[in-house]
Length: 119
Length: 278
Image (cartoon, rainbow over all chains, first blue to last red; front, side, top):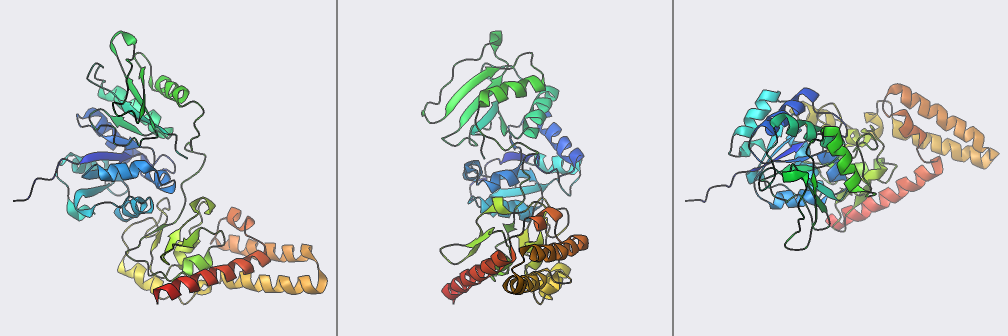
């Protein structure tokens, strides 16, 4: 029997440097995270971190399963790769705030399991 | 540039639990100013050894305790935020950051190409096309983004020359350049590209080359730099009106001689890289 996958860390991207994620969606998700009990990490902008190869991205990947509320999966995956912090496809899920509604994105974050098809 | 500071909202273990609304307003204000923030329980994994961890909380008596990293690697500072609104908390953080440099939102838009290596065939078209030295080749002969600061904001031209739709600009608005999945239609359209000039619907690159040649001729015959510049401006103005490249990108293009030199250099790099793979 395989060992259970630990609870994923939640990572929220604010897309503060360009605002391509709809404001109402990213606000709804942040509000949801703020009102819940779960611990989470939030960053101003994953693109900006990738651009300067921020070592925090490596630290996040090394810490285990991740659920990332950000934008398009292909973009997030290769942004991490560009920062020399490739994501583990089996233990990472991307919640796309660019296409999902606020409630749908929040619902995905509430599910404790990783959906491997999401990356 | 990294602010070298990570913020932890401390709730519990001696500090008061914040209300959801207060937590939300503090987080929003800090994130919109470019800071990363963790909420208690997630640990300090976002904090590499060279960072400062700033712990914010409502502590008993309004006094933050002294804290230190047992491993002695991370510099930890605690601040009490009792009674401060979101703006007040952010001011406190700014003060704690001191003179550490930081790219704050509004200063630089993170605009640079991101390569989808699951699609990239290492054809080096992007290397040949970009006039700003954004691309380079790794020691293993692989195309890579080496100087993303050189990339011209809002210019996605290299993604349009990529025959495999492998170049993304996540801050771009339209698919598939923004990172959305590449549809079959996208892939087919890109495969039909014959060369860079055809793509730009009327051929930016060949026009530039043409202007470069014309300019060289003029330089040799007349030595009139002014005329050459006027000619280039005429060409660039046309390209701006076609909407292929933002005006400020065109304004910062290298001189025709420089373009020729860069093209030769890029071709040499590409040749060497492709030879390594052969």
